[in-house]
Amino acid sequence: MLPIDRIESIEGALVHSFGSAEVSDVALLAGGLSGSAIYKLRIGDNAYTLKLTPPQEGEMTDVPALAAAAGVAPRMYFNDQRQGVSISDFINNQPLRGVFSPDELVRKLATTIRAIHALPSVAEGRPLFTTVDALISQFNNSGILSGPVVDACLEGYQRLKENYTLRKEDEVCSHNDLNPNNILCDGSTIWIIDWDTASLNNRYIDLANAANFFVHTPEHERAYLYTYFEAEPDENQVSRFFVMRQLCRIIYSMLMFQLAAQMKPAGFRHDQRMEGFDMPTFGSLMASGSLSLAEYEGLLFYGKALLNTAADQMRLPRFEKALAQLL
Image 1 (tube, rainbow, N blue to C red):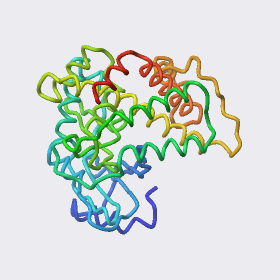
Image 2: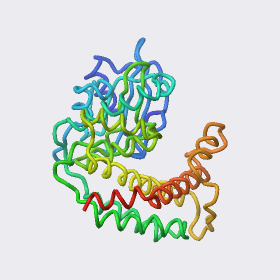
Image 3: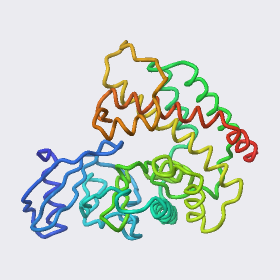
Image 4: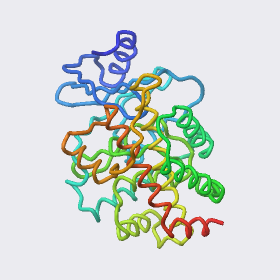
């Protein structure tokens, strides 16, 4: 099951970590947006995660090791980015909502994100709006979707970009992909995995990404931000958080459409309908097994639901008030 051309590096990592390359079982696991190959290894009575990424060159910060030392990532036994091989503890994941109450969960997430943002400086990433502009350009060139909702979201993004000053004080070590697949729980502790896209970035990206999956009421939003800032957030902080939630919805929608387009041949006529594509319906269909993000239909539905949500939020008076607050 393991790639033949990586066996020598894998065996070396195992011997370095455990004194032996003997493995009793190997299982392929699903990866994140990074596309890394991830495996579960059984060594004796214990399970570990083996991650294979393309070998890298140059000076790199070992972010997973820093995160593990800070208690927000699983323990690392081996991590050689030049070989593209890492070994860490395997987390027997349990549903977050089954372990924590909604009130506990938002506070646990905020505390975890605060710890991520306190990590030592890492490599600078691509400028935020440059990244988003590139995603939107790819989306426009794909021709996958158009119409009033798309126009409203792209117009809202342009207004956001014109008003949102990226402050140096908000530039922190960021994970950049805090989706449920990368937020694990062993029954008591939250662990963050898949650090491939980590870089210096705006703090509100991580805050908004996680919130879009787990923070759904005004009360939980207040608790989430209060826990993160360890104080009552001011209007500017609340406004930055709110508009960034819409930007993150647009970013994730672009990524979903990009993946969906790759699953269909050039010239395929994509369904342009937007009515009925919302997050509650998406959640229900995912829970019932009727949709999957491993398939075209699931990716397209999710992308549409994200755009509809962003468009709805940007039509609210709160969006106008938030933009004015950022001036």
